[in-house]
Image (cartoon, rainbow, N blue to C red; front, side, top):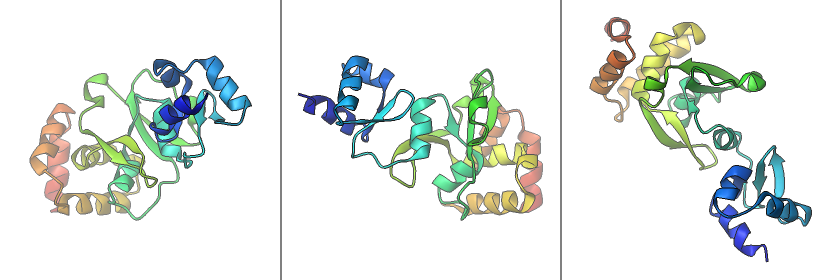
Length: 194
């Protein structure tokens, strides 16, 4: 009886929110019955999983907060541009979003809606789940713009590693810098480190 619903959840990496479940034809009542009968587990408020799901805090956080983009150290980590595993998740979202409940887990950055999706790409967590993060060019712009949030040595090392990457496009970085109104800051920084 529940096999159809379990297949739907498994196609979603073994995890689903109650809201997403409803959009796929699984009612909250059905989720409760499946949980009570041991077919799925409730792993967080409004989030359910099958045995297929391997716990992935990055993916779960993205699933619960669809308007966030992983940024700074977390974006670097996902793109193999740093050896350090971030102690907290760096997330960027629009200005009026309140995520104060998660202050122990995240470093929160807020931006205007018009630049929130600038440089947003799909990347994969270490567990292979897709999440949103900023590309290298946007990440470099963010780091240069907010150097006080990172230790200088780590920031310089990460930026040098990014600009040496075959995936890095300096023209795209300067285009982003103009849209973010930080062109001179980025230009001066790049001239100083090259």
